[in-house]
Image (tube, rainbow, N blue to C red; front, side, top):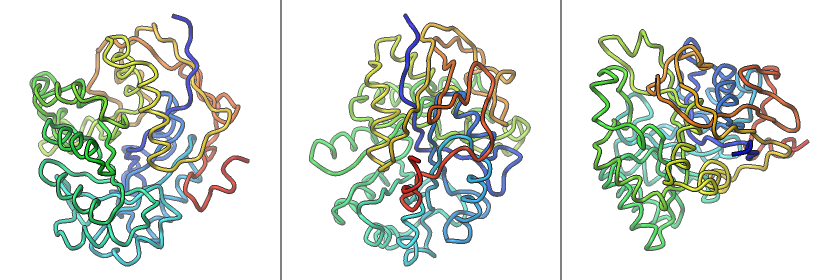
Length: 361
């Protein structure tokens, strides 16, 4: 198959650990990993230290991204009990409002229905709300969004009950979109013994093979493929208290291209879920003169030795993947080619509405 030229990919769910966890990943290392994986625009999560819940904390991440990011970027604001009255004012500076409703800790864990409803009611309806919601919490989120007459995006769907209620809600006209991660499509509880308890820790947890099969079976109701890139060092993953999360920016596209080779997905379906749908859902600007070149038949193996991310490991170590990004072009300039970067820190641009007037120039 000849070399493919595809639009630059978009990842709506990335953890870059800055501020507060730069030893694991910062905006430069993380966005370089994105370019190596064909991703030219990332939307960054707010569960940093400090969490991104107000103007001052948001400014820390904005400044770091402006100085160091090498691909385009947006930042999701975190919803908390303390910012129900102020989050809406920050909407022009962010790419969405993120709710943490399950399996998380700290000040971003929303535990009461009143706070959830207040955020749904106050945040502008033309700006995205996205939720970490699992199991029955998905139903609560769908109801709150429906009552307010607005859309909602469900992050990293991993279980049969979740994708089926989202499917049924879509079929009844409820405004819901969702994303699935490559690791939930290709890994399950059957892989925990091989990976090890610490290295298999992720949120949502790896689900059963039956859940995994349900995701594939309902792929037509999945809007986006996201990485949930969550880098931790191996020393942390192999410790007695392993933090949850997998790195994914460099392997996600190749894994979904594997699905194309397997006949589970069309190339057009891949591009829809990794470019066009994220752009629509999160109201993102076009990236002019931006593309990736892919050798669809190049066989390679992810490993700690060929990883750009500071995490320096992958749960797909040793897998034989077919298809790899060989060149990435951002706004007409070659920024990555076969392991080499030709880009300066700060070359990425902010996609938030407040920055749009300068985006395409």
